[in-house]
Length: 175
Image 1 (spheres, rainbow, N blue to C red):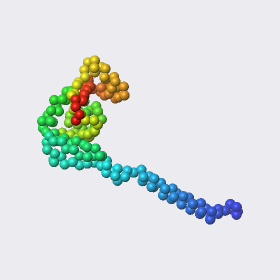
Image 2 (cartoon, rainbow, N blue to C red):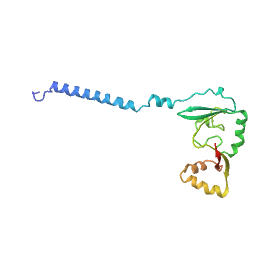
Image 3 (cartoon, rainbow, N blue to C red):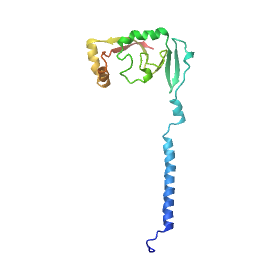
Image 4 (cartoon, helix red, strand yellow):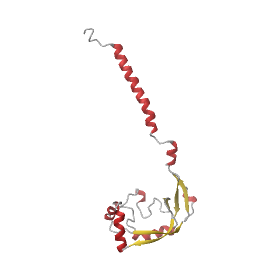
C-alpha cells in the first residue's frame, strides 16, 4: 500500500462520530414527536370505562351516569320487563342479533350480557311521540328514500326472511 491508498484514521473517526451524533439527534427529535401522538391523561380519562354498582339501582328504576361528558341511562329491568321482551320478538327483524354487528355477549334477545341491565347512551332531540307502523303504499314510498343513502338496509333485508318494519315517530309534544 502506498501513502495515497492509506485510510486517514482521523477522517474516518470524524465521519463515524458525526454519523453517531446525527443519529442520536434524529432519535432525540423523533421521541417527543411520537410521544405527542399518544392521548393525554385527560383524553384517556374521558374514554375510560365507568363502573356502576347496579345493586344500588332498584328493579324498574333508571340510573343516569356520565360517560365522555354525555348522560348514559342504566335501566335495571324487572322480571315483567324481561318477560315483555318475548312479546315483541315476532316484530323484530333480527331478534337474536345474529345478522347485525353485535358483540358476542349481546347476541341474544336481551341485547345485553345481563338480561336485568339495559345501558343506552342518551342523545339527540327528545319528544313524546305516537308510533305509526308504515305499511302498503306508504311503506313502498318511504323504503326507497331511506335506501338512497343507506344501502346497507337492503343488504340487511337480504339476510332475513322478515320484512324490516318502518315506524314513523311523529312528535306529539316536547319532552
